[in-house]
Image (tube, one colour):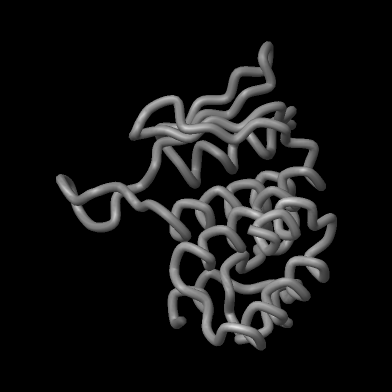
Amino acid sequence: MEAYRRLAAASSDNEVAAVVEELNDRYGPLPEPARRLVAVARLRLLCRDSGITEVSAPSAATVRLAPMTLPDSAQVRLKRMYPGAHYRATTATVQVPIPRAGGIGAPRIRDVELVQMVADLVTALAGIPQKDIGITSSSGDDADRPVSSKERRAR
């Protein structure tokens, strides 16, 4: 419970990495639920730094982010990345369909993959390098390193 509070209170990637390192030292590799918490903590930091205060899933098929003010170039990028996405300037809201794990009829992505998709969306629209928000090393030391989508797929 204390680790959860520390992750929620973390104000930087370094603080998140310190909690992860301490948990690894104490208990060994983190179980999947703990890895999801770490990914959400890192997404929370990324959104805070980007001025986003709301990330929600109004349905099982979409994710909504707000507030997001997008210049024309970012709106074009959004439509190119997610053809079914909608941007509403009046409410500064972006709504994006959650991709499927495979072809038509496959289940939609979830858990860390969904959190990573949202992080990729935020970084792409902000024009900053993508970040792997999951745990990529036992200590999380490389969390600040920009990661290409090709490199992420290879993992």
